[in-house]
Length: 129
Image (tube, rainbow, N blue to C red; front, side, top):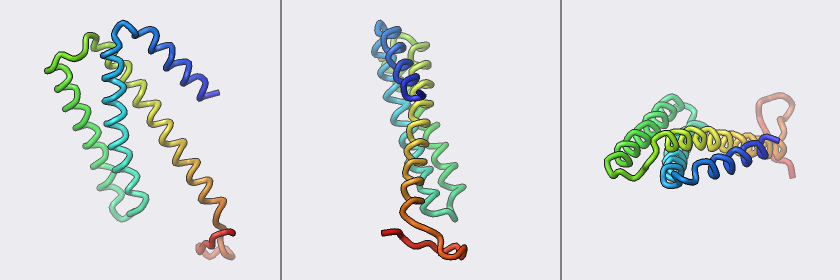
């Protein structure tokens, strides 16, 4: 049901903002780049838990830097025609990409949990064949 609501929302916004397609597509692209780079850095904390806080702070700063530099460049180059359309597209796609990435991580975690089992409550795991 959530996927259907998200798809309908995206299609409805694309139709509503078709007059300002450049602003909509630039907002979508900037959101995708900023959020994706932030998550790529943040998920490194899973692999190296001793540096988790450093990775999370770096991810937030990278996302903020990409967003600020992107917005400055977009307004300096006069690419968009409607700042409101850009803002709505950026916000919406940031939320959608965040939802998609978190669902993907949960799915991967479920698959990994099904492929291993704990040995006698010791905290050690073995792979299932």
